[in-house]
Image (spheres, rainbow, N blue to C red):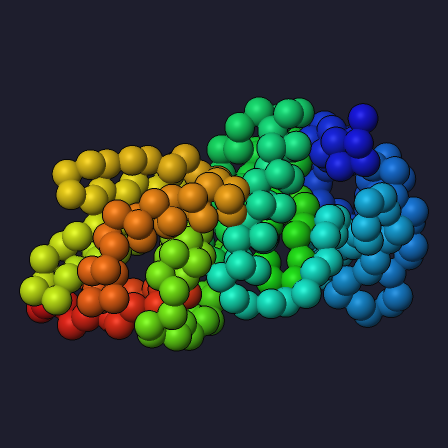
Length: 251
């Protein structure tokens, strides 16, 4: 049994009232090395396998526990995004082997997938620089992510793949040609990304690995061919990484 699987199994079974007085007992039960917090601090760290772990406090209440799974460079380009999604999908799959498919799904630039357990919600969270496992009383609040500027005119396939991998649920993106005709539509829901092009439709289940987004985008770019250089996009939000001009809504 892997260290992540052991941690997930232990955290999923624990019942507690999120009291700081009970934290040492919980940390020991999970297999982490207890280190008492300094007086007046709002967080503390523990030694854990495979990485560091910690807790956050609000007075006498513990608000969250976390286990850092991966620390990586905070690169922002399309390939870095796709590499993040590969690691995210692998971690989600590993937890799902113990707890089943995640029931709390949050696609987006910093996606998370969660499972409801006795003490609250256990989540895998993918952020720039880190991949973490969190236990919270309720699903996390997703803060707005800064938009990463894309270079208009850059290669379509890598940017389209990273853009598709970063769409929040409820986002709809239209790729339109020079005449304003819709050539491709992308619709992100909690459970999957639907892509429609020229009457054909495919659904990419969420969460998906970076390699799946790369394959999808390469196929779209090949299908659009030379016309890709004349495309722009329409959406009710700016789309990170997509190397196309954002068209006016009336186009």
